[in-house]
Amino acid sequence: MKRSVSIVIPVHNEELIIEDAVLKLVAEFSSIAEDFEIIPVENGSSDRTWELILKLSEADKRIKPLRSAKPDYGFALKMGISNSKNELIISDEIDVLDHNFHKDAIQALDKFDIVIASKRHPSAKDDRGFLRLIGTETITLLLKLICGMKASDSHGPKGWRRETAQAIVKASLLDGDLFASEAVLRAERMGLKIKELPLSIKEKRKTPISLIKRIPKVIRDIYFLKKALNN
Image 1: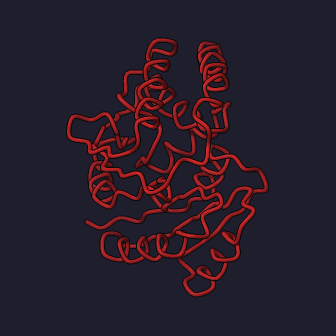
Image 2 (image 1 turned 180 degrees about the vertical axis):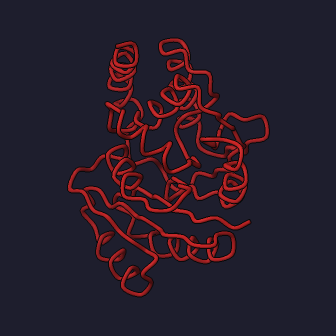
Protein backbone atom coordinates (compact mmCIF):
# COMPACT_ATOMS: atom_id res chain seq x y z
CA MET A 1 0.00 0.00 0.00
CA LYS A 2 1.35 3.43 -0.94
CA ARG A 3 1.68 5.94 1.88
CA SER A 4 1.72 9.72 2.30
CA VAL A 5 5.27 10.94 2.81
CA SER A 6 7.04 14.20 3.67
CA ILE A 7 10.66 14.39 2.48
CA VAL A 8 12.78 16.81 4.54
CA ILE A 9 16.14 17.93 3.09
CA PRO A 10 18.29 20.58 4.85
CA VAL A 11 20.28 22.48 2.21
CA HIS A 12 23.15 24.96 2.51
CA ASN A 13 25.02 26.42 -0.49
CA GLU A 14 23.82 23.70 -2.87
CA GLU A 15 23.24 25.66 -6.08
CA LEU A 16 25.23 23.18 -8.15
CA ILE A 17 23.11 20.13 -7.30
CA ILE A 18 19.79 21.33 -5.86
CA GLU A 19 17.73 21.33 -9.06
CA ASP A 20 18.76 17.89 -10.26
CA ALA A 21 18.40 16.36 -6.79
CA VAL A 22 14.90 17.73 -6.16
CA LEU A 23 13.64 16.73 -9.60
CA LYS A 24 14.93 13.20 -9.03
CA LEU A 25 13.06 13.10 -5.71
CA VAL A 26 9.85 14.20 -7.45
CA ALA A 27 10.20 11.41 -10.01
CA GLU A 28 11.03 8.84 -7.34
CA PHE A 29 8.22 9.60 -4.92
CA SER A 30 5.68 9.93 -7.72
CA SER A 31 6.05 6.17 -8.12
CA ILE A 32 6.36 5.00 -4.49
CA ALA A 33 4.05 7.33 -2.52
CA GLU A 34 0.33 7.96 -2.72
CA ASP A 35 0.87 11.58 -1.72
CA PHE A 36 4.07 13.44 -0.96
CA GLU A 37 5.62 16.81 -0.23
CA ILE A 38 9.28 17.72 -0.60
CA ILE A 39 10.51 20.20 2.00
CA PRO A 40 13.94 21.67 1.20
CA VAL A 41 15.04 23.74 4.20
CA GLU A 42 17.54 26.35 3.05
CA ASN A 43 19.69 27.52 5.95
CA GLY A 44 22.12 30.39 5.72
CA SER A 45 23.20 29.95 2.10
CA SER A 46 25.27 32.65 0.40
CA ASP A 47 24.73 31.39 -3.15
CA ARG A 48 21.63 30.96 -5.39
CA THR A 49 20.23 27.95 -3.52
CA TRP A 50 17.09 29.75 -2.29
CA GLU A 51 16.41 31.34 -5.67
CA LEU A 52 16.58 27.93 -7.37
CA ILE A 53 14.36 26.29 -4.76
CA LEU A 54 11.71 28.97 -5.23
CA LYS A 55 11.81 28.40 -8.98
CA LEU A 56 11.24 24.68 -8.45
CA SER A 57 8.38 25.28 -6.03
CA GLU A 58 6.62 27.61 -8.46
CA ALA A 59 6.64 24.84 -11.06
CA ASP A 60 5.49 22.10 -8.66
CA LYS A 61 3.37 22.84 -5.58
CA ARG A 62 4.46 19.56 -3.98
CA ILE A 63 7.81 21.28 -3.36
CA LYS A 64 7.32 23.33 -0.19
CA PRO A 65 10.49 25.21 0.73
CA LEU A 66 11.34 26.65 4.13
CA ARG A 67 14.09 29.08 4.99
CA SER A 68 16.22 29.92 8.02
CA ALA A 69 18.93 32.58 8.20
CA LYS A 70 20.83 30.34 10.61
CA PRO A 71 23.36 28.01 8.90
CA ASP A 72 22.57 25.01 11.08
CA TYR A 73 21.82 21.47 9.84
CA GLY A 74 20.03 20.34 13.00
CA PHE A 75 17.90 23.46 13.28
CA ALA A 76 16.90 23.13 9.62
CA LEU A 77 16.06 19.45 10.05
CA LYS A 78 13.88 20.20 13.08
CA MET A 79 12.12 23.00 11.21
CA GLY A 80 11.32 20.67 8.33
CA ILE A 81 10.06 17.89 10.59
CA SER A 82 7.90 20.30 12.60
CA ASN A 83 6.23 21.56 9.41
CA SER A 84 5.66 18.13 7.84
CA LYS A 85 2.03 17.21 7.20
CA ASN A 86 2.07 13.59 5.99
CA GLU A 87 1.95 10.37 8.01
CA LEU A 88 5.56 9.37 7.29
CA ILE A 89 8.74 11.45 7.11
CA ILE A 90 11.93 10.70 5.22
CA SER A 91 14.84 12.94 6.23
CA ASP A 92 17.92 12.86 4.04
CA GLU A 93 20.92 14.86 2.87
CA ILE A 94 21.05 16.41 -0.57
CA ASP A 95 24.35 14.73 -1.46
CA VAL A 96 23.25 11.28 -0.25
CA LEU A 97 19.68 10.46 -1.43
CA ASP A 98 19.77 6.66 -1.28
CA HIS A 99 16.60 5.76 -3.19
CA ASN A 100 16.69 2.12 -2.10
CA PHE A 101 16.67 3.27 1.51
CA HIS A 102 13.66 5.51 0.89
CA LYS A 103 11.60 2.63 -0.51
CA ASP A 104 12.68 0.13 2.15
CA ALA A 105 12.17 2.63 4.99
CA ILE A 106 8.58 3.32 3.94
CA GLN A 107 7.86 -0.41 4.08
CA ALA A 108 9.65 -0.86 7.42
CA LEU A 109 7.64 1.93 9.04
CA ASP A 110 4.63 -0.40 9.00
CA LYS A 111 6.31 -2.16 11.95
CA PHE A 112 8.87 0.31 13.31
CA ASP A 113 8.79 3.85 14.70
CA ILE A 114 12.15 4.97 13.28
CA VAL A 115 14.33 3.56 10.50
CA ILE A 116 18.02 4.47 10.46
CA ALA A 117 20.23 4.35 7.36
CA SER A 118 23.47 3.02 8.79
CA LYS A 119 26.86 3.55 7.18
CA ARG A 120 28.16 0.87 9.58
CA HIS A 121 25.60 -1.82 8.70
CA PRO A 122 27.29 -5.06 7.49
CA SER A 123 25.66 -4.60 4.06
CA ALA A 124 26.38 -0.87 3.76
CA LYS A 125 28.49 0.53 0.92
CA ASP A 126 30.48 3.53 2.13
CA ASP A 127 32.79 4.92 -0.55
CA ARG A 128 33.60 8.22 1.15
CA GLY A 129 37.08 9.51 1.80
CA PHE A 130 39.30 8.34 4.66
CA LEU A 131 38.73 11.39 6.86
CA ARG A 132 34.96 11.05 6.67
CA LEU A 133 35.18 7.36 7.52
CA ILE A 134 37.35 8.14 10.55
CA GLY A 135 34.93 10.91 11.57
CA THR A 136 31.96 8.54 11.52
CA GLU A 137 33.80 5.89 13.54
CA THR A 138 35.06 8.43 16.10
CA ILE A 139 31.70 10.10 16.70
CA THR A 140 29.88 6.77 16.93
CA LEU A 141 32.43 5.42 19.42
CA LEU A 142 32.12 8.54 21.59
CA LEU A 143 28.32 8.33 21.55
CA LYS A 144 28.47 4.69 22.59
CA LEU A 145 31.05 5.23 25.34
CA ILE A 146 29.67 8.48 26.77
CA CYS A 147 25.92 8.23 26.12
CA GLY A 148 25.39 4.49 25.85
CA MET A 149 24.03 4.60 22.30
CA LYS A 150 23.06 1.17 20.97
CA ALA A 151 22.56 2.04 17.29
CA SER A 152 25.47 1.46 14.91
CA ASP A 153 25.06 4.93 13.35
CA SER A 154 23.05 8.04 14.10
CA HIS A 155 23.86 10.74 11.54
CA GLY A 156 22.30 10.38 8.12
CA PRO A 157 19.00 9.51 6.42
CA LYS A 158 16.08 8.33 8.52
CA GLY A 159 12.49 7.28 8.16
CA TRP A 160 10.04 8.34 10.85
CA ARG A 161 6.42 8.16 11.78
CA ARG A 162 5.41 11.81 11.90
CA GLU A 163 4.04 11.77 15.45
CA THR A 164 7.26 10.14 16.68
CA ALA A 165 9.55 12.58 14.87
CA GLN A 166 7.64 15.64 16.04
CA ALA A 167 7.59 14.43 19.65
CA ILE A 168 11.36 13.94 19.58
CA VAL A 169 11.88 17.39 18.05
CA LYS A 170 9.74 18.94 20.78
CA ALA A 171 11.82 17.26 23.49
CA SER A 172 15.21 17.96 21.88
CA LEU A 173 17.80 20.34 23.32
CA LEU A 174 20.46 20.36 20.59
CA ASP A 175 20.65 21.89 17.14
CA GLY A 176 23.69 21.45 14.90
CA ASP A 177 25.05 18.16 13.64
CA LEU A 178 24.33 16.29 16.87
CA PHE A 179 20.55 16.74 16.80
CA ALA A 180 20.43 13.59 14.66
CA SER A 181 22.30 11.68 17.37
CA GLU A 182 20.11 13.14 20.11
CA ALA A 183 17.06 11.93 18.19
CA VAL A 184 18.36 8.35 18.10
CA LEU A 185 19.31 8.39 21.78
CA ARG A 186 15.91 9.75 22.78
CA ALA A 187 14.19 7.10 20.66
CA GLU A 188 16.22 4.39 22.40
CA ARG A 189 15.38 5.73 25.85
CA MET A 190 11.70 6.02 24.95
CA GLY A 191 11.67 2.33 24.06
CA LEU A 192 10.66 2.97 20.45
CA LYS A 193 10.98 0.29 17.79
CA ILE A 194 14.09 1.06 15.72
CA LYS A 195 15.18 -0.63 12.50
CA GLU A 196 18.58 -0.24 10.85
CA LEU A 197 18.98 -0.56 7.09
CA PRO A 198 22.21 -0.42 5.06
CA LEU A 199 23.15 2.86 3.40
CA SER A 200 24.90 3.15 0.06
CA ILE A 201 26.90 6.37 -0.09
CA LYS A 202 29.57 7.83 -2.35
CA GLU A 203 31.63 10.96 -1.79
CA LYS A 204 30.27 13.41 -4.35
CA ARG A 205 32.42 16.31 -3.14
CA LYS A 206 34.83 17.25 -0.39
CA THR A 207 33.21 18.13 2.91
CA PRO A 208 32.89 21.92 3.34
CA ILE A 209 33.44 21.52 7.09
CA SER A 210 36.84 20.92 8.67
CA LEU A 211 36.56 17.63 10.55
CA ILE A 212 39.52 18.50 12.77
CA LYS A 213 37.94 21.81 13.80
CA ARG A 214 34.66 20.03 14.59
CA ILE A 215 36.12 17.54 17.08
CA PRO A 216 36.31 19.79 20.21
CA LYS A 217 32.74 21.03 19.67
CA VAL A 218 31.45 17.50 19.06
CA ILE A 219 33.01 16.27 22.31
CA ARG A 220 31.51 19.19 24.26
CA ASP A 221 28.10 18.59 22.69
CA ILE A 222 28.19 14.87 23.48
CA TYR A 223 28.91 15.55 27.15
CA PHE A 224 26.15 18.19 27.19
CA LEU A 225 23.82 15.67 25.57
CA LYS A 226 24.61 13.04 28.19
CA LYS A 227 23.88 15.52 30.98
CA ALA A 228 20.63 16.65 29.34
CA LEU A 229 19.38 13.09 28.81
CA ASN A 230 20.11 12.17 32.42
CA ASN A 231 18.13 15.10 33.87
